Length: 172
Image (cartoon, rainbow, N blue to C red; front, side, top):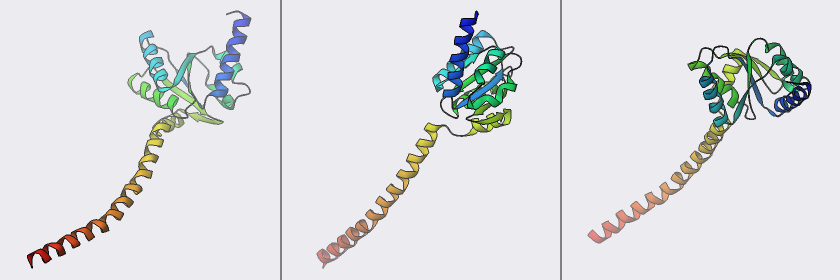
C-alpha cells in the first residue's frame, strides 16, 4: 500500500467505526480461507461485516471515535467484526467461535463501552432487535386476545341461558 491508499483506508475505517454500534476484535490465526469466507458470509447475512486490517492503521482509525478504548486489543493477527445492530456482530462472532476454536474473541466496544471477551459473550446472549420486536408484538397481542375472550364470554353465557329458557318453554 502506498501513502494515498493508507490514508483512504484509514478514513474509510474511521467512518466505519463511527457508524457501527458494535465492534468485535478477534484473533484469526489458523483459520483457513474457506472458514474465513464462511465467517464473512454469515456476518453479511446477519447485516454485519468483517475486515482484516493492519493493527497500526486500525489504531489510527480508532482515534476520535467512541470505540477508541479498544486500541490496545490490536496485537497479532486481528480482525474486526462490526454491525449497526448492537447485537449482530457479537452474536455471529460468538456462534462462529463456538465451532472454530481458532477464532479467539479478544473484546470489543458497544458505543463508548469497552467490552472484554466475557462482555462480548454477554452481549451475544442478548436477543437481537428483531427478536425483541417480535416479543413486544406478542406481549401487546396477548392482552388484546384475552380482553376479547373476556368480553365474548358473558355474551356466550347469556346466549346459552336464553337457549336453555327457549328449550324449557318449548318443552312446556
